[in-house]
Image (cartoon, rainbow, N blue to C red; front, side, top):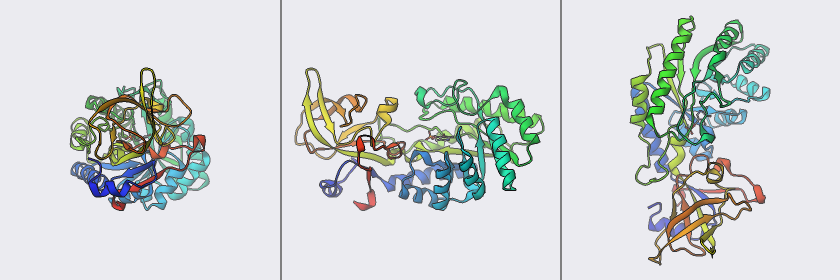
Length: 387
Ligand SMILES: *Cc1c(COP(=O)(O)O)cnc(C)c1O
């Protein structure tokens, strides 16, 4: 159960829709990931793009995690939130000059560089500031993440990283650049990966490319294997915390490393996915010729994943049901788009106007993707310690 009786009474009159964040669950998740990483000497950077809600960031920062950023504003945000610059990385295929300068000024730990041209621009801008930028080269290892094609990033056909065919040139450019220093290699093959064999294949590629560079006389210090660990969207109560032990074990076993190497991770979804739920009310019910619809006051403007990636989220009726009858609903939002649908043919206790519905596992890529399309109001949120 998402809420106890007291909490249910407290949210009965709350204005919907809102994100509900369970800070206790986030706290437990952070403790588990930290313990599992520390035990193996691994470093974890939190991928801000999954959720940059203020109190979530405060809690994550307070536990000593690093920050993985994909824009200049995220770099600035992590600085403002107290993440130390030595633990901030900056990735992304399209870093603007302005964003690069922001990151250089703050002296972040490393840029994860995604093309030779970007390397040259960072070298030039770092030269103007009289600094040497630390860079990791993002390599596209051509590993299939077996996930939705919109969240696969490590295939040759994807826009991310330096293609392996260009690494020879990249190594030359780095050798001749006076204001960049190569400290590591970076990989990130996709998101919502639940098949551990994908990470095993990734380790094989990381070993290969690490050796490739080291055989050519370039010592690699940081092996950054990215993020991508998935969460259980189907059973959020059964599996509220991902199996970090099993995940890190794969890298512990299959990554070749010596005392000279640091292993870095950039986890987003696995850390914040389960702590958030979107709470919404039924506005109307409607029976079509073949369908029953539940029309909610939340839509793709609050949670875009179903419309964007046909993503599954568990949908539940909140609280006790006065009806024992189970119905099959298409659960839809109010936005003027047919893709504004949270689930088709969802079995739920009979529901009606005013009933609360929870869309679970919405902590990652939920609130941060909200838009004001249809001039929707800014999305609200409530933390568990406010109830
Ligand atoms: C999005 C992203 C991550 C985080 O991915 P998750 O699947 O949320 O763990 C990590 N690294 C990079 C470079 C990313 O773009």
